[in-house]
Length: 615
Image (tube, rainbow, N blue to C red; front, side, top):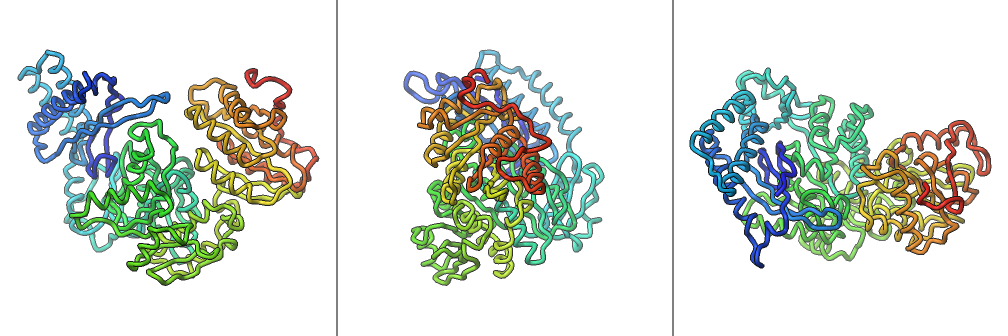
């Protein structure tokens, strides 16, 4: 048995909707199954931990805090490893101490199972120590405000440094240790703003940015948290990956915000939980195989469960009717909550007019969005309102990028649920994506000297397949793609990427080294794997070359290009530098065959010049 992690859960999470602490344990297979019967060591550990955790919680005055043990698995090196998550709930103001309580309970359980029972004096020493930790951390004013906020119908957002009441234009922030008494708060001055949580394997950033364009057209000041930045209106508050709960708190504390759009990634939800206790809407775009090697999501079904964490706090849902995993996960959610009153209402979206889920929803007067006769429509029951032709929406590349058609439909459904008018939704659809600054690094389109250039962030099997399909649908004499891989991807994902590339019929491939994403791998190791996978998939040896960096790969692509070609530049390490190079070439009037000018990195070699193992 190995302790994998011990951490706080600050909001609704993969286990439940409660704050607290969790321990993740890795187990040997023999500790889970012995003599053909499940439940040897694992069950004994759970039972002992539950006993000791309950004993200590009661002694500390936390009798109302429940405990929960959940079997989980994780894929490591292609092998499914069993594990356990052991969680206990705790007051919001004592989560670090809760981790100490949980760790003590595990140590006590393991000690007793090993034949060394905890003596009464040792328990009392531990209780005194843990009580002192709680006393040092606890913040009674926070607990009082939390209860008062619930009574007054406003959100409370807290972290180690600050506590806020309300959201956006109705928010006020205090230092965490300088909180007012509930009676001193002007509750009439506080209110929430509409909030939407957007999650899924692909398309999150694009969808929240399109929703922001629709909200702006409706007169809102939208706040966005995303993998690139936190932005309010046109102002970027901070750059970086803010797709966890910290990004949501930052934007919802800005008093300019009238509508909050939270891109929410799996990692933040699994590790810490959600920032919000209540949200108006959750949008679940799709479920794919990305990050399956990480804790608790070794297969697509468990990944779907992770994507459904926002259903613990959302009043309404927007779901992809074309994704079988999402449809099945919602069916389980409905079954599990059929006796409750809090099953969220659903608005479905689909690319297929005959989708049976949408057909059933329309038959009973349901709402959603649909691609119908080449148009993006909003439906309510049998009535359909055309908002735009797919060919008139820039982000769809004239309808060729069907995955962005799906993202647009999700945004339409969400915008309607948020109360945005149809004309504002249509304005957002027709304006968003016409400029690369709308959605940097996500299907940005350029034309240089007769060469069509697409820049995108695709980085997993589903993203590659969708993007390659879009590229194949665009007219071009020849097509080139840049391929690289992050060091935490397994060989199967590399082979899948190569197979999708060959299936799409690219004429030339530049294999790039992602120097910022080696993640423990050696230089040259991943490009060698990509080359081998391409050859195995059927790419001819003379149709690829290597580059030592992403920017060098882009320069190689431009040197290869001639008028009529399509260059698909997958940018991960150096997106800003890649876009800057393109803008410089555009400004200079560059033509294919001309030198790239200042800034070229060189260092590119062809596959015939040296074997991949030497790179």
